[in-house]
Length: 251
Image (cartoon, rainbow, N blue to C red; front, top):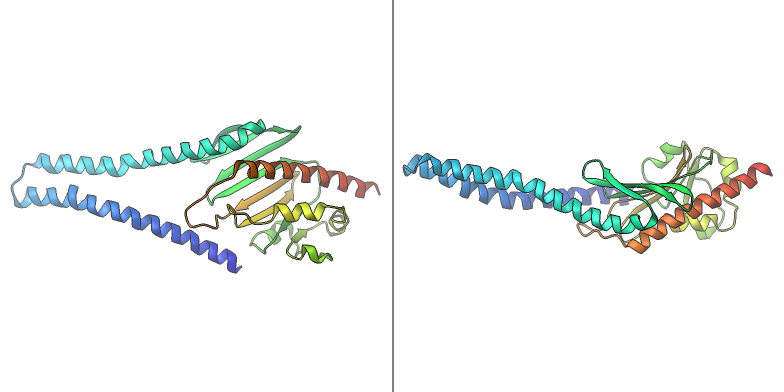
C-alpha cells in the first residue's frame, strides 16, 4: 500500500504542476488581453473594438489551443504505439477518444492491446482456460477482489515476491508446479522503468498483462522491443497455462 499511496500522490503532483503551468499562462493573458483593454475602454476612453478584439483573441488562444495541443499529443502517442504494435499484425483504432487500442491475431491467437489514462497498458489474449488466477509482486487493491482469495503460499523462496491469487486453489496449485511457470509469472510482474505495477489476470477466457503507473513524474517512454517482448511472453504464458491445465485435468 505505501507504493500505491506514493503513486497516487505522484499523480496529484503531476496535476498540480500542470495547473500551475496553466495558471502561469492564463493569468498574464487575462491581464494583457482582458484587464488592460477593459481599463483602456472604461478609464481612457478607448474605442470598444479594442476590448472586443482583445477578448476574441483571448478566447481564441485559450480555447483554440486546447484542441491543437490534444491533437499533437494524440498524434505523437499514435505514432509511437503504431510503431510497436502494427508490426505484430494488429490493427489500431481510437480508444476512449484520446487513446489507442489494437486488435488482431498473433501466432494464431486473438490479441487486444489498450493504452489509456494512467498510463495503463493492457495486453490481452484469448484462451480456452476455465481457471481464475491473478499474479502480482505487490498487494494492490483489486486483485483479491477479482479472485475472491488471499495469495497462495509458494514454497520456493526464489518466488517470495510473487503473489498468486485464485478461486481454483487445488487446480492452480498443481498448475504452478509446472517447471518454468512461476518464472514466467515473476518476469511478467516485475516492475520496469515505464511501469511501477504489473499484474497478470486470467478470467473469463482472457489472459491479461496489465501494466500501470509511471514511476517518473513526467517523462514516459515505451521501449518498442521491450513491449513487443511482453506481448510474446503473454502468448507464451497462455500456451504454457493451457498445456499445463490440460495435463492436470487429464491426470
